Image (cartoon, rainbow, N blue to C red; front, side, top):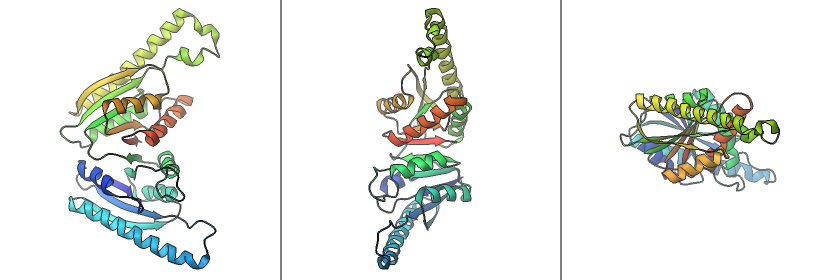
Length: 288
């Protein structure tokens, strides 16, 4: 397994290191510890650019060396390197070049000048990376929330989790959002307000959510993973419900597929995973 760990030279590294070293990784997992020196903003006096870039590069090299040494001390294989350019472009391109299976990013911060892992950069990486991306906010992972809509992407996410290595005390909770079509078409298609048809549509949505949960739980349980519980919630903004459930259950990680069902729903669920990654209080892995 190959993992690109994007390290921000300007913030503490302890949480990110604790997260990585507390997880169980496949044998021979390789970590590429990357820091990106962002372009100097316009308006800086040309004579000072060289000095600024030199100082930034030196600081970044010290940080990635430190992070890599912490991983090595825990028995992991890690190689540090520093590159220059637009951070999200460099991260996505390097992940593709390395054939990375996963990108690990420290939790994004609010936009502050030219912060390395600002929300805009983290969002762009989640949106454009070809591999899975995890936003790291917590240390050890014991409680994993798995949202599912029964789509191919959700099933793939469950299979990735089932194939992974986890702590012996790790538990998984599966959740699904009931999406009654009558709620979404009530305004545009008044004839569908018929109570009998609305009830049939509601029952179909409930059955779909139940089947999605069962399929995901079956994949996880077949791999010997512990299932804590499952949750079905009524229609609302899915990202809001996922974040609320993660907080209520005290999840350490939300593992969510990158896209949902076909057509416009695929686009909408894709935006849900991106929103959850940006705003959840715990770590979030968007699985591709």
